[in-house]
Image 1 (cartoon, rainbow, N blue to C red):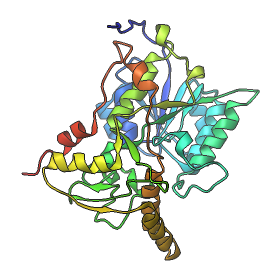
Image 2 (cartoon, rainbow, N blue to C red; image 1 turned 60 degrees about the vertical axis):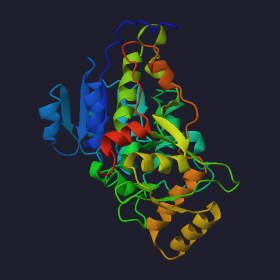
Image 3 (tube, one colour; image 1 turned 90 degrees about the horizontal axis):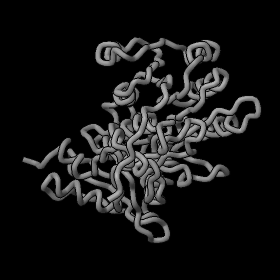
Length: 344
């Protein structure tokens, strides 16, 4: 049996997290378990950070003021963004001017290679993702000061299957999750015991989806930080790959419904649509001007196209080679049992 590597502590880094929402809090909670100082950039006070994470430093910022951001980011090595659109673009510009070594954009979803190509329209890009990635790619090639960037691809957050979907975390409203079901669902409404799925792509191939709890995504980010520059396994920030791929689970779309039924102990009411049928519905809602439902069906279609499928990872394995960072992310059934349990 191969022994896990023993490592020296990682070199001290200054880490900043942009955003004061729930996911930013979870990231800060995990990263502050290390010795690295963490700076939180936020538009408004967040007493929960100061009360529960006293080692974090908060800075109130205006994301429209690049000069102010530049000043605040001086000395930061790693910047993790949980914001989007023009605010993130301003943050990228300020980070590059402040000579931040590595930028992690707010791109916690499926692999980059599974998204629509650059010469086509991505109907689900309502957060400025392509513009941010293009700007980051430009700065990563700059001759005067290159800023590396890395995307953490994790599939979908398992929390989409929690009560109310991602809305209790303040995440779902911008992601096109609103649909014809009672709440902002994606694939399965566990509470209502209903599902709507497209199980195969246009060529008839089985659709797979990768899932990771946002808490485990935060643990992966913190583990990557811990491994940076630490011993033989360490990867310096400047050499972080363009994409760290992680996952807690990956299964066929139909299997997701089956696991939910097993955990809840009841049969769900399932609507199974062919790819062509879902495409027709998407086009109909688009013509009718119903943007929310159009995006809902687009997400089902892109799921069938493999947008959120991660068949191989590169950070899971690296993390588990070190005793200091090793952990096993939750599988879907384990997560469902913790959050829902069986119907009584």
